[in-house]
Amino acid sequence: MTKKFFCIALLFFSTVYIFSQSASKKFQITDISYDITGITREKALDDELDIDRTKIFKTQKELDAYIANIRMNLNNNRVFKESDVKVSYGTRGSSGITPVKLQIRTVDTINSIIVPYPTYNSDDGLSLKIKFRNYNFLGTLKMFDLNFTYQYIIDNKGTKDEKKRHYAGVQTDFTVPVKIGKRELLWNHNIDLSTNFGKDKYKPYAYYGTGVGYSFPMGPGWFGWSTDGWIKHETNGLWYGYYHAGVNYSFPLVKDVVSLSMAANQSYTYDPTSYLPNKQYMTSSFSVATPFTVGTIENWGTIVWTPSIALGWNWNPESLKGGSNPFKDDMITNTSIKGPTITFSHSIGSSKIYWDGNFRRGFSISLTQSWGYNLNTKAIPMPSYSLSTQMHLVMPNERVAMYNRNWWYFNMDGTITGFADRMRGIRSSDSIGSDNVIVMNFDFPHSLLKTDWVGWGFPDFMRKIDMEIQVSPFIDVALGHNIITNTNYLIKDGYYSGGIEFLVYPKSMRSIIGRFSIGVDLARTILPTRIVGDKSWRPATSRFEGFFGIGIFY
Image (tube, rainbow, N blue to C red):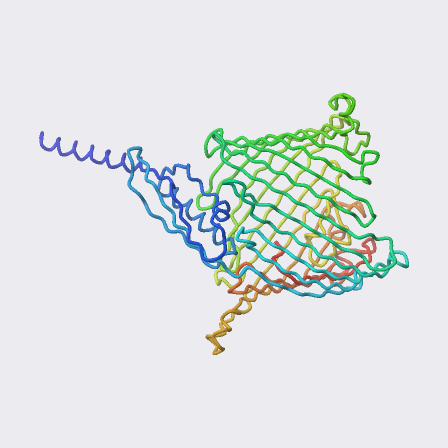
């Protein structure tokens, strides 16, 4: 009996010991090495992945999910033709934590392309553009964009000299790495130069914008600073300017649950036309946000709720002269910018959208509500709401997919927001907008052709131009408060467009996606009047809209 009891006790305590050892097995990513084929800079890739080297993973499953997310982020970055993450484990220490080493391998794809494309329509005239784009400029994983544009403009609403004129311009946007001591900063530049030829009132247009920022660990959190600004010479012959500087600090209150983020910003604006008599003004602001992780969806991600409060105040720099106190008299007389204002807002959302070959899968949702209170007008604050969702489904045959994007907003204070840029087939010149609307996009991409030139008997060099071509019918719909007819969510007073897109995915240039799109204003062309009503209230702009260039619509 004693022997039997001893065996049972030994078995019990052995089980408890093994279980406790297993339960206490923790992991920490302590070492990361990179094997990069191409020009991508190691620091740029490390910043892009933002791998947490301090996080303690309580289980193997939790670690595996984190590494799977790293692999997904690498695959989503189409700058890389290939990517891989290898995992190795060290010896567990006395703390019960097993060190983990990641070996990350990437191979750059071809990231540069030159695209010349002409366009013509009876509303705007002839446009010729040459675009050069690089998606990994100087290995920063940032884009370099250069456009040369010529346009023969037809403006039937203008004066005799304005009706037909020639326009030429060059625009570029790029980011360069700058090393200051041991720190490397990314410095952005945006330049836009253009001129009109002919006897008209338009002066040359010039714009230069720049910005730089950096963040680094400080105490329990991260401290960051940024500065940016721009100067602009408009076609009316006047100069405009803006400068901003800001700092921010964030740190965890409860690790992996809630954090605190604070930001302080100061800016200067010179605008000689918009807010007269105040041609110049300063803007001071301070904000606090507390992101809460309210839930975690397995194999998906986190659900984050973020309440925030922001205080903003415009004041005239003239108020500092002569020992004056801008807190007592801000010397702002234009009521459009006079404050101060307090904004309360909160948002909740979650997202996981990823590339699977040349299709996308996943879903995202974000809901935001905000109130703004002006201490000058003391008007009752009216809330604003917005809801954004996006869904990407791929059929089991993996040749057909369905994409959907929805955007709803409701500005109870009556603020008008435009949405023409979210609809294909309706020109932005329509200037459509509303204070309460939902805009829906539906796309149905289908893999039309995957080339295999070498397999089809063509020479080996044609392997470099292998590609996948997708054809995607689409329908865009907008319903809500029609501010012209003053109706709400009536089918006959909505906006409807549809058309077809051709998407080209070069195999050797994964970051480049060619897109040709032709859209039609369905309400003014195909749909019967008995359904969509009389559209005489719509401006007489073109009923077609086309696009030929680089990049997906959403």
